[in-house]
Length: 96
Image (cartoon, rainbow, N blue to C red):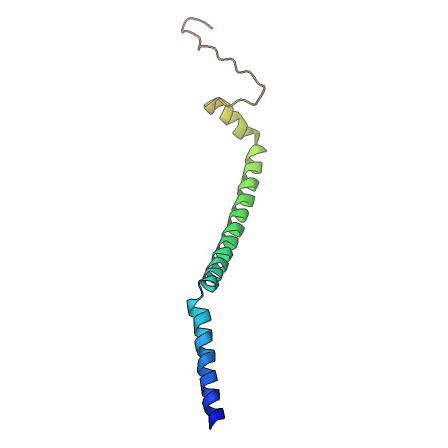
């Protein structure tokens, strides 16, 4: 009978030890929380990289269109580095 009692006590002791490790160990909790955060951040990184690639593609397409550059120069006054912009007042009614 002593073997049975020892086996039951050992079983309860093992369950108790396992419960203490899983429930009472902050290190394990922090490890699991950190891993979850890592997975979420990795997924967000992939989304942002895809978005960046799409925006780079759009920017390249816009930059290759001379009409966009002309409109930006005319309407917004954009100039390229190294360029000098000269502005003249509009002619008066009697002048040409």
